[in-house]
Length: 521
Image: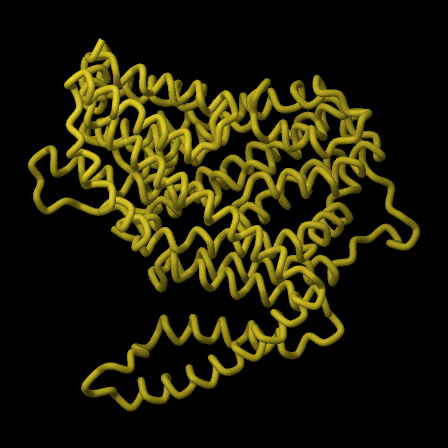
């Protein structure tokens, strides 16, 4: 029986998780239970658990993981600052007079929110509350409306900056180094989260294009399912482009500042996350009191100015000799920091008075604590699993599959897809990926391509009936007139689109690897 303890351990963890026990305690508890069983049977050495304090310290001191609370703060703040509501309203006016226009609007707004927040549950719930009643009232098919909202809401899994990509990037970076060391490469190459962000950008935008193409085809083939909207008399038949520009400007500037600073090599993902958090706070301050925008505009301009200065000048103070040009830049940077502090202070005060700041900080703390506690529980689980020889068993199994690395990747994707019905992406990222990724990467598989494939796969499992998480989120906010069967029927075409996208990415890895190669070499 001792030879099968690793398999029993994995099955026991899945069983406990499906029973509803808290994830972190399930992972840690299962690990400790099987460590005790393995010790009693003489097949486990407790010395493996001696590495746990070092693992926990490594988690707590990981600079990349600091990006998690910052991106979460950014997403929750934007969710509560009515950005989605304003975007949906104005996009609906722009595209609504076209057949299928509301569905296209939902997809575009979903992509923008994905690039702004990266939080799937918040996006699905927000868009379900705001756009689903409107789409049903305008005569849209309930199935098409539900499918469009659920699919657009899950774009936060793949379009950077995504919490999924941050966590996957950290795990895959470690796995890539392990794989190279196992192959005898003592000067291993590195893969950063910025590489993964760049690799996911084109596939994510491609998915947006496929969703919009499907909306257009449905509007052409079945016009009754997605009718055009007659303009309201107050709109005089024309969209308000000024209001649209106002709704789009701030989120787009924020997206460009965060993603542009990462892809341009100006900032690390953690530094870019701090830019996003500050920008989201400024945007919330502007939305809460639009009549007094001066401090917010000054703070936003200062933030952009600091990014530009950082790009062109060396602003470090601890140098022995600072050239005159850099000195001027440092003086300007101090002035811009003062303006930014003023804008942030005003925004924080407005958010506090409106009762938004406290709720955002509380939600950010809860989500961040959950992620890090799961990380610690997963560290216990993985140590015991390796001590029982589970990694060797998985390595042997995947390496001996007929069909080589393609069969191994296909099997891992299938397992992750099925697990995605029952487990959250955090559990899969911290439990499954550290076990299989080093083995797959030893087969000369590109880590960026593998990471993007995993992210899209997890996104697909979020949508797939009957257990997709996005479906439960939408069911919770959908009106009683929408049946669960409508939601299931609506998402099936989008699941097929996701599978087609996965197949295209598998056949042409350059879709994911070209942009990181261009940007980072």
